[in-house]
Length: 161
Image (cartoon, rainbow, N blue to C red; front, side, top):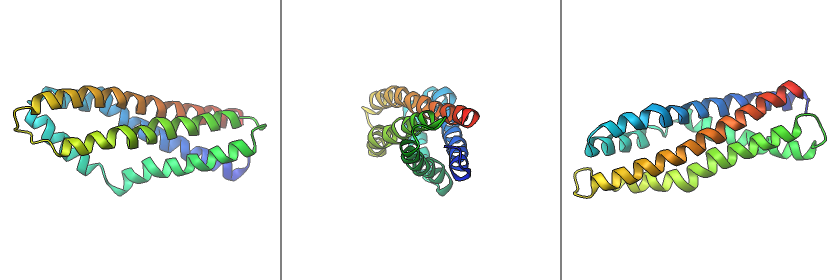
């Protein structure tokens, strides 16, 4: 796992996972808390806006470009499984793919789409916002930990590989 191209891919994955972990960490530690302080209609409206504006080419490149690099690294780690650092690269790639990508696709995207359909001024909006906020934030911690674990594995693999 110490060829030049593999080292560069691992470095790119390290940067991507770290960047994505930082975004998720920000949401887990203060963005959602700030939204929670708003009255429910304003919190819902703000989150609906965030869910639209997050779909930028740069963020999608960071999130899904890192995933593509992780797929390549997982395959390379399996091919070179006896090499120093290969197991850590594999674990890092899987942590990112499961923690960041699968959790986003299977959990966050459906909830974000459902929140888009919520009328912020409807009578049940405060209850729906409370449930959304609590569940969304809890699972965002999973994305944060998965991305940070990947970043850590990639960093250590570069050191020993």
